[in-house]
Amino acid sequence: MDRIKAKLALADGRVFTGYSFTGPGEAWGEICFNTAMSGYQEVLTDPSYSGQIVTMTYPHVGNYGINDQDAESASIRVEGFILRAYHPRPSNWRSRRSLADYLKNAGILGLTDVDTRALTRHLRTQGALMGLMSTLDLDDDRLVERIRQKPDLDGRDLVQPVTCRQPYFWRPGPDGGRPDDHPAAIDDWRRSNDRLRVVALDYGIKYNILRRLTEVGTAVLVLPGDAAAEDVMAYEPDGVFLSNGPGDPAAVTYAQETVRNLLGVRPIFGICLGHQILGLAMGGRTYKLKFGHRGVNQPVKDLQTGRIEITSQNHGYAVDIDSLSGRGVQLTHINLSDRTLEGMAGDGFFSVQYHPEASPGPHDAAYLFDRFVAAMKA
Image (tube, rainbow, N blue to C red; front, side, top):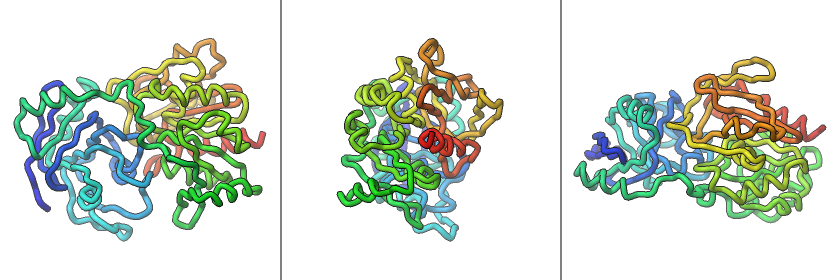
């Protein structure tokens, strides 16, 4: 493995040193951390990470390589990847290539030998920060000045770069399924008479959500995130799904308008960004968390049953609980770490902030897909 000296400069002036394991280059974005012990391939390909550089808190990464089944989208979505210790020799029967090759082929810069514990503690104290990682410029002061001139992600619509450009049918298969955007595939979706037909609005949807929806007996047609309500209803679906995605939900105004016009028309289920957009469509507000929730160990309480779920999460914004008061919204789930809103429901809709489809991750919340099916049947 080639090791090239690198620097990571944060907008508040803090600088970390390390080495690139993917060759020379630069990358900038919002620095965040993920506390999962595995699942780095899913993290890399999750569209919700668009615009962000991800730090893994688990120290050893790369040991099981990269396979052909675990991607959550068609390409790597992170801006950069930061590790404590990269493992260059993967050992797993499913592995097809190394993490270094995977990142290098996509032109993504990966750093190792960074003090990720110190970096994570710094982000938890200071909050989310923009960062610049580079092997080409190692001058601390110059790097800090350069990242301070970059725009942050607040108020930016990050859905447009990751949403699909045309409708597609999620075609089931032994490998978990695949997107099919051939015009004939839309007809196949319409003819899925033995299944409930779902239209999913793609704000940055993960493949495993589509797999889970298919597993519980639905046929899924995915539409671009800027589809209007009349575009959705033209397909006469049994239900509407609002997907996860990146960035500030308040910036995705067209999605709010679409969801507002769909409320009460068809059963709606939202996850992550879809949950936040639903909250805004109901007249609520969203706000940015200090450093977000990213990992597979977030405790959530179901306020209806009293049951505690260990959940997988990836978000930097939340819906303001107080802003939903008097709007016909029932609060259903709450985060036990910081008391933020994790779920809500109302007449014809429900949503959660966390990821019930997550793989790897706990399966405590898988019942939510069955709840969606029951709502459509009812």
